[in-house]
Image (cartoon, rainbow, N blue to C red; front, side, top):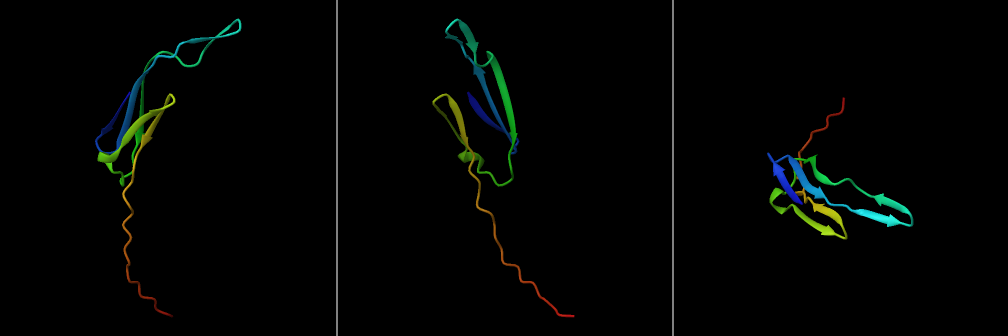
Length: 82
């Protein structure tokens, strides 16, 4: 599997299904089709692209996309009574 960032706002995950056929009694069960897959996800603006991490946990692909802290500013607002 691989994870790529395309143009700073698209996260692309590519890989290959290699699922086999499982025998359950007299039935044959195929969980997923074989072949290549591609998934694309829109990223928000506040992502730390160089800190994106992927790992495999018990057959599940986990992608960590950390965000930057939001910029909070105090803006003085005057209130006038009419």
